[in-house]
Length: 603
Image (cartoon, rainbow, N blue to C red; front, top):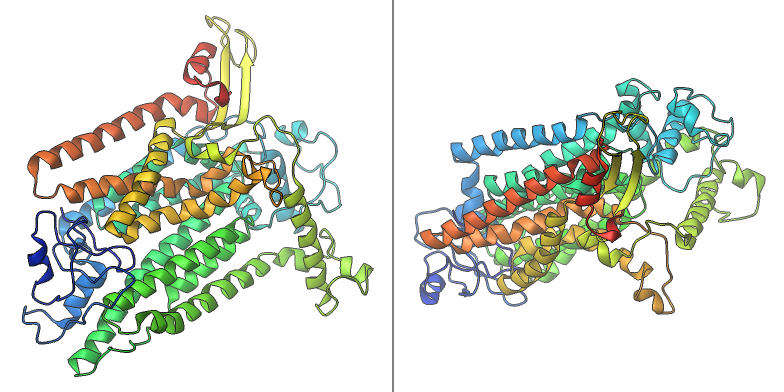
């Protein structure tokens, strides 16, 4: 197994381990300087110089290795392993067979007894009822005092004919409503959670395919999907109707679209540069334009849907936008474009911004369509009732929506109420203070606890990621940063991007950052980490991939690397099996719950 290629931005694309530096620097068809410090990145080709610096010389028809200019450029831009991946029948078979098996495992862990417990757990009390009235009325309605017992018993029509003040956009609630419609209606707790489960299963399928393309390895794609399939955060959010699950999904879709865009753009670049060179032209100053980027447009749509679920999707717009521009800068430099930085900023970065940001904004505004068409929606008539107030040059519906958003902003920035499961985001990466969604203890003979039980029974739904997976993921973040810098590997930045966007923006809202005068405390929870859970998985898989690459051709070291990876996966699976009852509300002996929940901060 050889490694995939590496971007000129973040890797020197060095020769395989053990290749003399001089040999790497003087291979036919690549006269660029090499690096002897990194892993094999494309099956043995040479490397462009490290970023920043001069561009790699463009291949020419006279390089004399028998391959076309386009073939050599594709190897440089995508890597020989990526180019071979879909050509091998074994890779194609395992790529899809492994995807199917892991997806079926995800379905089993998420759909089994999905309706249990038959009670609104944690914030389902808001989102399920909001989704139900949104689907029936076109806006979220208020409910009488203590509506949950009646709603859970099947009396779901007790809502009031008055709009409720809600502080999150509607996309996630529309998705919950679609699941209720497909699953039998609001009287079914299975239906409440059906959309979350389907989205969780699809997320596993997506991650397998994204990781396979990212690492140019069917095996590592399967490993990534397996880890997400058995993680506690992913399982719990797939079995509860909260908005964060849908935010995670749309963010992951956007990332997958940008990974596809990266490959498609590089294929176009290789083809168009080779046409110029084969015709006797040059790219010594500027390179070709790449045309409209449909995958990038799809990413903009997905990011708009993410923002239409929760505003924290905005951070992914910023981080992913920077990421895709860096990929373009690296591609033009690797293709030998002389003024690659200027060329890419003009013909890639500006169109990237214009494709992603306005698209996301339009999709976000459009997500409020039912609010626009229903005059009884919350603050829908505010502008008509307050002439001359607000941003007066806007049409009345947009002026009302803007005022509503100002109220939402005030809520989110001022939320500082006490909560027993509020957590410091510094601990999220090791799941230090998980969120209890549901907990119940019954004595023998009480409720569903058997009368002949030797002890009390407990049921829990705890939003706690697999502790070993997250601990190793935290360590892998440090390792990935080190490897990314040392190897200048584009994949390191890619796998870290989601954690940067999903985790770092929350740090200023907790100690020690709140000691600074421009930050303040806010009530936040560990379960927010579901949005970057797939990226924690990718970050954990990345060092495994590098270990396999670095041991290529060395039988003993390769066997050790494989053994360690298999052992880690086996132990993670065992830990997931132990915690699974406490993620899914299964009834267990009270002592079992006590023995598994070993840390006081977990309770």
